[in-house]
Length: 245
Image (cartoon, rainbow, N blue to C red; front, side, top):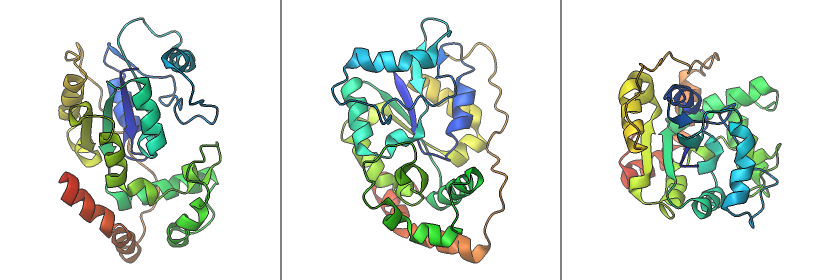
């Protein structure tokens, strides 16, 4: 495994994986997300060979060679997952798509509503989050509140980027904005393929949009309040990493 599209959830990782998979030298898991490092069964004693064995079924039937990656967006969320990846491959390259944290949280909330896992309205769901996540900070079980209700936690990008940079140099981390991927996908792909040391693809990449969420956006007052909830996160992201939403 040479690269991960490590986040963020609802940031455009599905679109990016679909685009990248069209490159003849890129190998991504069947179904996009392998969930190896966040698997409830993951054992801290696993060595490289054991991790590779866990990944093998996700690439069954694919052509040999190429650059292998995993597009599991929870990987950047938790420092333990970052540490596991660093132990496995200190040369791992990270591709991270960042979306406005308020927009990301609203999209995440609507996804969980569609799945039938969220029954609160948006505002209570956001305000109750820290109580719902209490005691589940390291819980990677399939139905963990950490996976489902982490609307605000996943938008704390500085905390997550700091954890990644504690193990990986900046040269191994490619940061992109989701809105830029939407506006200029070909330019983003050129940068990503160069970042991975790959030649340009021989055929044009089909960059048809795959971002549509299909939900009604909240009104301006509620949207503004959600944005206000992320005021600290946005301020720190601009100060520490020069990224402004």
